[in-house]
Image (tube, rainbow, N blue to C red; front, side, top):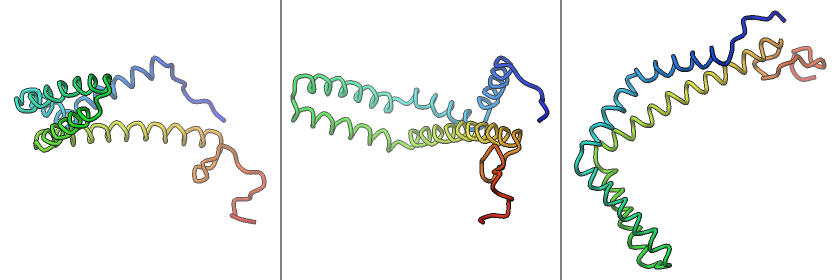
Length: 145
């Protein structure tokens, strides 16, 4: 096994920062930022968020004092407010942009994880298809015996 270049944690951290900057400049992140800005400026959304926060505080108080019937009513109001917010097209676009950014980050994470695993397997003379790091001494590679 020949040893190739090794990297320090700091070198890897710097590459991660470089990758993070690249991600921050993608269409997905740009759309997310624009949608979030519009939501922050959307008066009805802000009103609904304020109402939800107020109702949530009320729910905590009612729960604390064991007022279960009143709590159910407040929870129903909260659900209705959430439904109203979710019905606003801008909010739907914002949530979709969150999903797309998360998918991008998950793809990066999966690619790194899979590549590191494959590099380990290959560097140890293993079998990528089987996902093992060493060759099985009882198998000649011809399948089942």
